[in-house]
Length: 76
Image 1 (tube, rainbow, N blue to C red):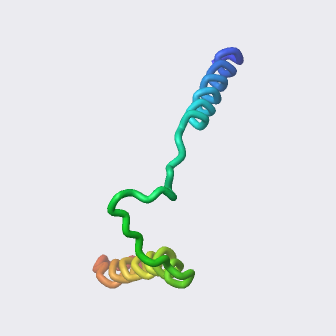
Image 2: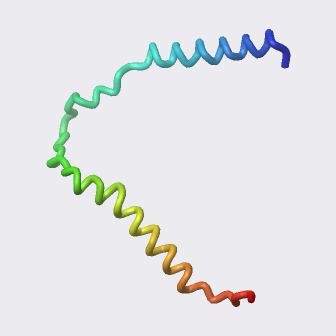
Image 3: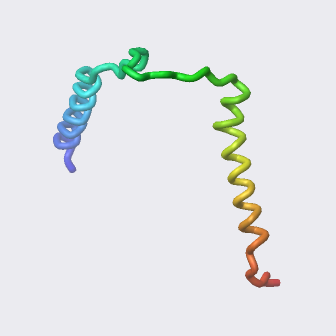
């Protein structure tokens, strides 16, 4: 690809990205919807436990079960 086509491709990609960002509307996450009933927030410990510790524990359990149940013969 020559330099002119590369510059044109970059300009089109940049322009398209900027237009998408400028024309997109905000998510309006703070606006309540009908029937919206949010529960109480999570503490820092609950958040870390749910999103950090729990996946690590689940991964460790699955990896442990795979290693325990592996019946293949060991090569010496």
